[in-house]
Image 1 (cartoon, rainbow, N blue to C red):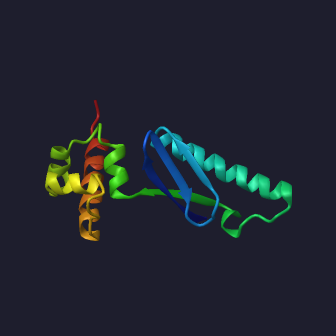
Image 2 (image 1 turned 180 degrees about the vertical axis):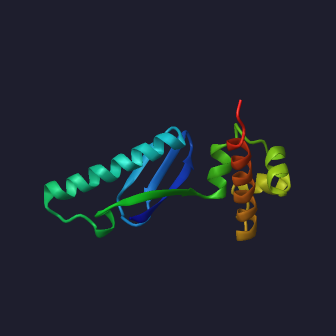
Length: 134
C-alpha cells in the first residue's frame, strides 16, 4: 500500500483540497470531514472516467493506497478558529498570540520549528483527550 498526499486549504466560505500526485483531482466542501469524503469520491470518479474513456489510469491510483491529508498553518488556524482561541493555542504551543495572529492572517509564514511546535501541541492535546473516559 502506498500513500497519496492531499492538501486542504481554507477558502472564504469553505474548503478545497487537491491531490498532490495527480493533477486535476480536486474537491470542495464546508467542513474538513466533508472535504475528505468529497476528495475520495473525486479520486474514484477520476479513475472511473479514465477507464471509461480508455485514457489510462495514472500509476499512482493503481493498487491499494491511502490518502494522507495535510494543511498549512494559516488554513489550520482559520478552520479551527471557532474551537481554538489564540490564548489556548499559546498555552498548547508556547508561541505567543501575536505571532499566531500573524500566521492566521498570512502576514508571516512560520518556520519549520514553529510548525513543529504547533503540530506537537495539537498531537499532545489529542492524546490527552483520547485518554479521557466519561
